[in-house]
Image (cartoon, rainbow, N blue to C red; front, side, top):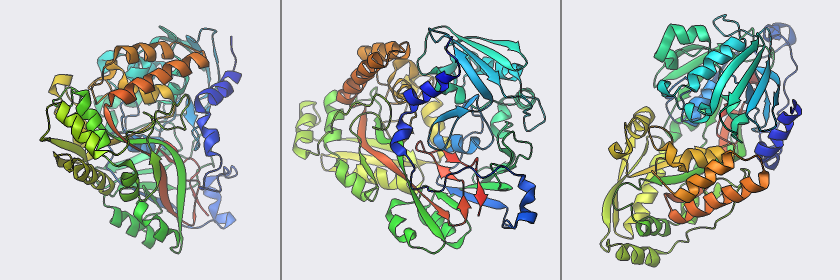
Length: 528
């Protein structure tokens, strides 16, 4: 039986990416000394006790077990915790468990749980609460997004009040980092049912106050949190502000204490503004256009390759990202384990036109590109529109509010119902399983998963399956390399860039970070 040291091994194995980040420009970073949040009056702490974080999109759901977007997940991380949690550098650390062991073939995980923890509604946290949550996620009938990872669970057994054993139906190499999914109060699950998505109850350092959709979501400090004193801000208000200029203005005036993302075009100017800090973080976020391969003319490889050759990736990074980012040279960020560089589809208009001609589209065609309503997305879609016009492809830009867009893409009953042609989007991953199985396994066509290109390849499916069942790192590297090679050649995306994360904050803000995957980390939030 491998003991708790396996946690450190897993961190090295799956999250060696964090070593590449080192100490990012976020600076500071140390956890504040543990003390009572109420002690500010005697220590001369600033009186300000509310922090405003302005973001670029609306939140979709507050159910951590049914979430597909990084922004909603980032807000949830203030209220929810898994058995394991990510720190600000995406290192895996203890959360609601203090240690665990795993058997030799990695099919049995036994967790020792943190004691004297309560959910925000007063419900005790214990092994039975874990079982209720895991049973919920591993039940296909509940139609939760977490099922794609928890479907490997055969059983969850309560050993005693603070010990739980999880048995898998097969080895799953990426399972350890899936235990970061937020645990919900069993009493709240029973009380709210499907409405739990609007009534979040977890164990995190902050607890839910209210959500006025489209305007703000507010949380307040959990005075009974097990890591009392790490977070010090009494209340945090998350505000969706899709328009870049408005978000920047809020930061300048102090109406917002943190903004994310910070528009790349204004990073240099804001860097010199009084009372403002601009932070940069290497990211695991890939930016691309997902192409629906079930739709004509995108069922033809030559068409998909043509539109890749027609897009100038250097120009995209310069014009849309203001130079912040690098070309996407595989299907995931080079900061993720088992990355294999594939190169780029070089900008070549003549080659693009020739491929379209060979495919029978010498005169081009008309299509749509979908995206959300924030300023950066609009700029990106318009750039794609202009680039493809050069090869005779007319692109209609169609923007939708984030929740509507998600419903249009993931709310379908079958792949044949999908109306999307192209989708301008990004994806953040912490491990190769999330970067590959989630996006390219044919088991994950919407509505079951996030393979929005409806990409299917027998060799890719086989390689992914074998990689998930192997603990041999060399074999995983070989198999995941084959996935990257085949997907890149098949071009189910327009491969654009790997983001560099930019965010802004007031100079008096401490302990708030945007993680490399785009999450909002507030577990140490404080004003200096």
